[in-house]
Image (cartoon, rainbow, N blue to C red; front, top):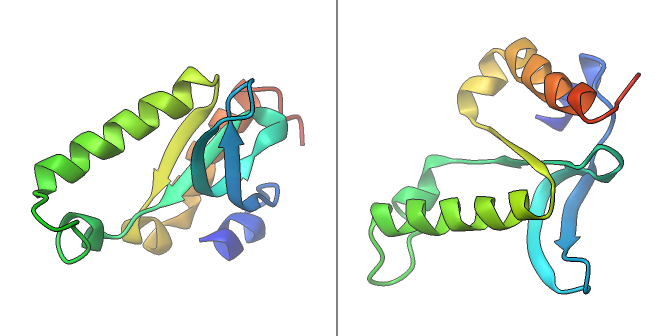
Length: 109
């Protein structure tokens, strides 16, 4: 995903970007981060809802946990987007989505 985004003119992200709150407490580790423009992104596979579930966890539990995490990220003033397998097939759409977020947050490149 990163290579597609770069080839389409998106700025390079910080990989495995750690987001902390103003007091320095850990909020999240994100696949991609653009801290200068307060944007983070995740590349999600479907395994997190099936084979990678925690013991006793349902797909609904994983989705609820994911939504709470995303709310915590947004509470820090960051925009959030997800990339999935279909974005690898149509990277132009993913790049446009990312660039819209970046530009809304001040990116001028």
